[in-house]
Image (cartoon, rainbow, N blue to C red):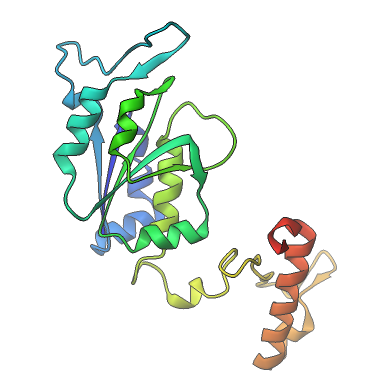
Amino acid sequence: MKIDVLTLFPDMFNCFLTESIIARAIVKNKVEINIIDIRNYTTYKNNQVDDYQFGGGGGMVLMCEPVFNAINSVKKKDSHVILLTPRGKTFNQTKAYEFSKYKHLIILCGHYEGFDERIYSLADEIVSIGDFVLTGGEIPSMMIIDSVVRLLDGVISKTSLESESFDDGLLDYPVYTKPRIFNDMEVPEVLLSGNHKLINEYREKERKRITKEYRNDLLK
């Protein structure tokens, strides 16, 4: 998979690309991630990429030309262009699986007051990460990339992906490790039994209990 991220603040991605699972996926050639500075595609000598909005109002707006130029520089026939904006549908695990099937994702990070409305014509899909406002799309893009890349074949083990939260509308089951007893809190005996049938039954029951207790809305 190839992912191109268009942003005004490329340095925000430095640590993200060099740590943990994302870094290992890049080293193993499971994904290629390019961070593209939108300012490199403006025709203004002072690298201007935004301006005041017509009709008045607070905040600066990303201009069409540099964004169109940046996207057109990397877009191919198999590209899927994603705009990050509050008007998009909320990103979830189902969407992460959908995105993981594409060969090439282009993610456009907004900033300031937003996009010139004509930029939306470039999008194959618009996505939001929730009903709240951030200063830009850089952090949301990292969240989406992280959730998608871990689903690619060979990035993490298939057993780690089994029974994950949200895959079937339920949260994940509780997990434990050493010590068996800590501050009078004990590991459930069934997990120490070696009886995999009972363990699976226990875990399924716990998934339903935890979902009902913490995210009852998922059961609806």
